[in-house]
Length: 279
Image 1 (cartoon, rainbow, N blue to C red):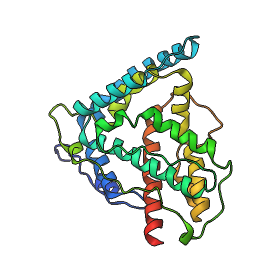
Image 2 (cartoon, rainbow, N blue to C red):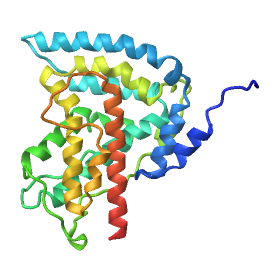
Image 3 (cartoon, one colour):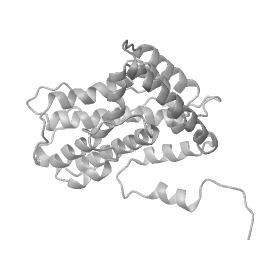
Image 4 (spheres, one colour):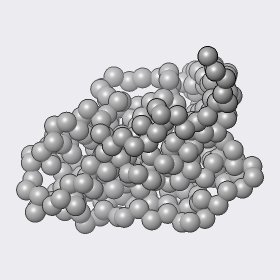
């Protein structure tokens, strides 16, 4: 029996940092694991999750019961950008910005290939720094997903020859280097930040907008099916944790579902890059 100080870089953490059984960019893994090192994630966040989950259910109940609905997308986005700029870790901010790019690229891949002939306009949400999220809002991010499904074919297209696949609206991820400049106050990790903002997000959206935001994750399964049909890889559906879009859910376990949605887009984006480079 021996005594030792706790350390983060254990054999387990080293193993998951090195594992690439699932397709994911090295930079995404590094940013995520470095962000996990924050003490708030392990000591404070579990307590906050209980408190804010109760607050979220109350806010969600009031929103749904109220006959008068209001929203304020600009104020919501101002709060998010301010909070990210001064309090959220650079690693978490990097991952948030990457998520805009990965999901926009995934949707544009589908628009260029699965929605051929449907005249679906490409997604233009590619913020390179936190201040640009004021125009590329989180609400727009959700609405672009719904727009693709509303304007494209209700069924996935068949396998397309690799030489015929279009990458017309695919963009290489290029984030502003300022994102990684750390302020002394930037101590809040990705998961804790989401827990803190759950209620605010619900408050500043109408009940219908919020319902769409928390249920849109379940379209991950449909996206995987459509991309798998295009490139001939049925295994992609296994990347989706959020499934069954016809079954509407509430805010239960929202942070967990949100983070796994982020992992899903990273997996799909990297898998498409692998396919693109092999073509």
